[in-house]
Amino acid sequence: MALEELKENISGANTDIHAYLEHNKEYYKLLVFRTLMKIVTSLTKKLFTGAIVIFTLFLIALTTAIGIGQAIGNMFYGFLIVTVFFVIIGIILYLLRHKLDKPLLRKYSEHYFDKL
Picture (cartoon, rainbow, N blue to C red):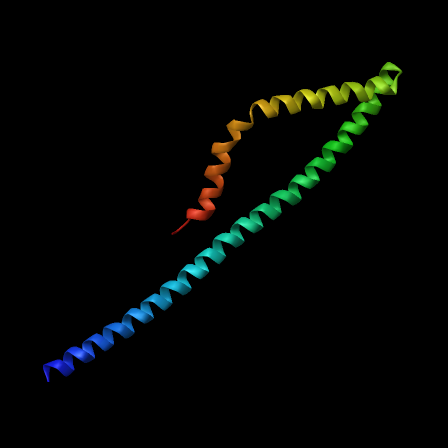
């Protein structure tokens, strides 16, 4: 009789363990999906916004180059001045690229480790 009770308890524990593992598996699947969707939607919004900003900067640079060219009487020099300005900005950003690592890592780790 005691052997039968032990067998039933072990069988019940086995069923409980399988149910726990199945629920745990589903929970982590949902957690991964939620995290991935947060990252994908965040990147999509940032890419869309970035594309609009780049297009706007392009138009501003174009009109500025034309304006400078008309002001000094030579379109070539107007475009050259704007180009040199962007090259200087690019060099500065290249030199400061390592300063962006921590803020980006902090921002995206919020999405990944949120409510684990």
